[in-house]
Amino acid sequence: MHLLIRDISPYTGPDLLLGAFATAAAAEQAREEYMSEIAGRDPWAEQAYRSVDPARDVRVQPIEHRGEGDDDTIHVLVEYREAMGQIVAGFLTAFADPSAADAAKTALEENEHSWANYADIETLTLGDRRWRHPGFDRPPA
Image (cartoon, rainbow, N blue to C red; front, side):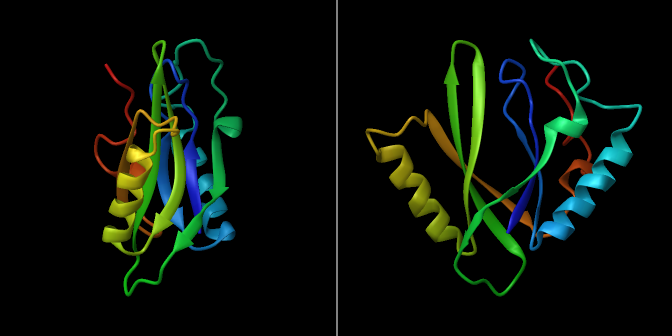
């Protein structure tokens, strides 16, 4: 399992999960599509305290996928940390079963040694190009 992620300045907002893909090749193809689609009109061209370079900022990250599902829906556990005006997101594990994802989220939030301020589950379909959804790939106003 591979995620396509857009790194964002932590002073602007958390990193974006652009999509999830079954293979590294599919994720790389989606990365090239995203790069082509934002060329000349990058919605994230202006970020706080950061020089933006989509070639560096858009990356493929392998992620552990737990469980087997009957469909292409996955549930990604995301850990968020906030401090001194910064928000950092960590994409931890993908689950086939939403109840397993929710149990992992609860365990992460209850762990007194966790650095997470909060956790969330992002549900998406394998191969979906989330940046094409209306309003998804827009910086905060």
